[in-house]
Length: 299
Image (cartoon, rainbow, N blue to C red):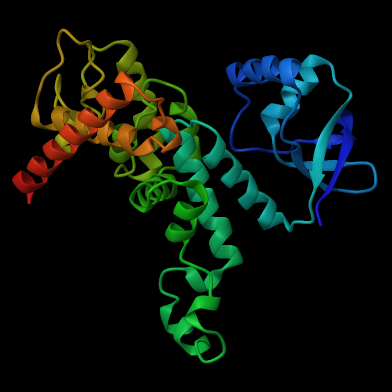
């Protein structure tokens, strides 16, 4: 049974969170709360008799704090530490529009937590799973991480796998450097994940500098990414009048476009009846036909 009560805001500890507060989202919530009230309680757990830890609802909590409320409705749950972390990841992946860096960090963290709770779902655990099948049916075992995450968040399994790979291969310090910058793109993360971990921070710093000064060379990169004035990790961020339609540049832009399309949820595409709905249907159909042609061309 969930215990919902009014909790003093001063008694709530937000702890260390993967995502920072977005001022724009907080201000929008403030307007909504002032107009119609808080529709959904935040979720907390009891630290002791007088202190609570935040599980989900950091933006709602901050909005109420800025409005000047002393208390906020909260659902008090009994979660383990791992379950609380899983809930935080799901809350953010479901409810917010995240940048590619944030998606990668949340999905990678969710994978760590999920596999800690369900170690039988880890890759390589199949042999051990076969031994426990005599004690538990396949249906009783937890689904694999990608399947569970897709079901809980609405993100496609393919996108979940891509986010998890980026988050696991790129170190936190490099992620923090590029989060919220013009390099916070899926195509850039796909390049950076192939850079040796010990070189990722240096690479990210130089690419950020190069983005601010597009005439500098990109000689610090190797292989296909080291082509000066074209393609590569930073090549797609040149000014529009000098951007080259090189093979590498076209590849990066295509991957970025696919990332953007796959990030759309069904809720994002809900439109009312009329011309907009008809146009959306026609364009989606045309896009599907074009993608079929591209699939045949690269098969």
